[in-house]
Length: 207
Image (cartoon, rainbow, N blue to C red):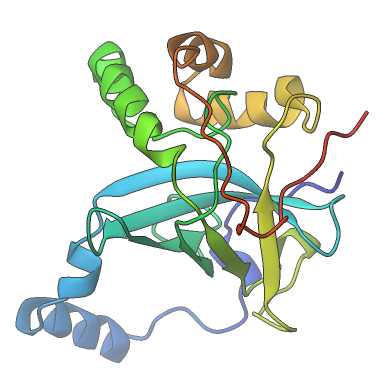
């Protein structure tokens, strides 16, 4: 499988922000009220795979807000830092793979035990959701700009589909977590029955 590079602002064309742009940003932050983005209440890290090319996947950072108790909307970035590139959007309506430990909510390491308890409770809700996900910027193939058509994305949902020891291990090291521990913490989460009207956009087991 092809892996994705992490965010690096040096790969994006253009000059550094000018003094004028920096002043405008600072002034806007003081004068304007960014209500939609202020509603973001969760950061999820997961891996998406291309529906058109299951051999390619992207580590994706989701920043999600609740529209209602039943509807979430997420903006997707290729990293968690200030220079991360916005690469897609997701409306949470398709089942996500959470029992594997692949999906995490990065949190403060000093509160690891308490945070993991809260994270597990969140996973109980997330596993029941449905999702519709499009990536607009193919950073994994080295695109410097968001070129080409939007790509429908899917999630890994079964054992044997992904290199946990390799790629997920690298992600875990970045955030100071361990998917094995999360598997154990989530083993009691009941796997939901997928609604028959849901799209078949789920990866089948790869032997």
